[in-house]
Image (cartoon, rainbow, N blue to C red; front, side):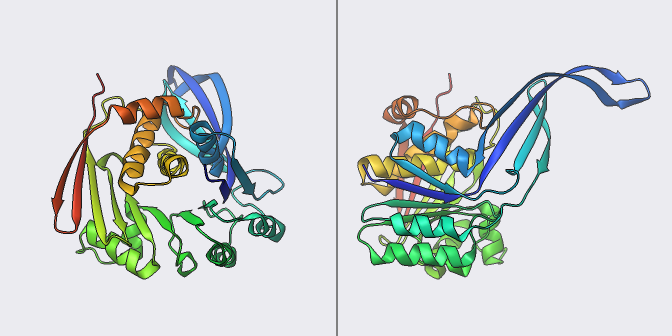
Length: 303
């Protein structure tokens, strides 16, 4: 299996679960609550790391920035319903030594993931250095997960963005979503994945000149989508690392991992290889080919 090297912003996901008691007598719109429990787990690129280790073992390595205090997302739930998020300490101090250490350790056949939450660990010049180093080696695959596409991302092997980021990158409201993926790929010289949450994803594979439009049934067991982007990427990378072949199977597996993550609350739990592999083994997909586009639909049985 390929080594997996991750650099990104390590956050803390803090969950506060509250029990509603009554309305405030002075303002009946406001709830009076009491705290039931609190839990903390690694978030941001830390959530990606936790899922990668769960899916493909221990040969996963992490570089992240530090500061006086780690950025924290505090999520408040009332009766297990997510109601608001409070962000604290939102900046990570940039440390060139972290970039140097990662760049020096990249070897042939590694998978390198840039998981950028734009908190400060990674700057544009760092992305250029990482991609440049990978280009000097053999068979290194670079993944970038970002919500802002910069010129420095040019040449990554895989660029994963969400639909809103794609629209901001193209700035052409009349352009179809599949054509967005193609144009971004041509501009960025990368395979491109545009995730659309419960509506699936679009991928453009540049070497094959092929579009994949992926749809699926509604997830009846949906809880929330927090961390689904991280788990999608973890599924994609873990499949490629373990099997080292097959872009379409890897993308289907990635969607399954993300699906499983949205069936549980937040980022508290990881998706295991055993559960994901079993779900993948039983996956039902239909494929319709239309010129250079594969229309793939996954039937979901949540019963």
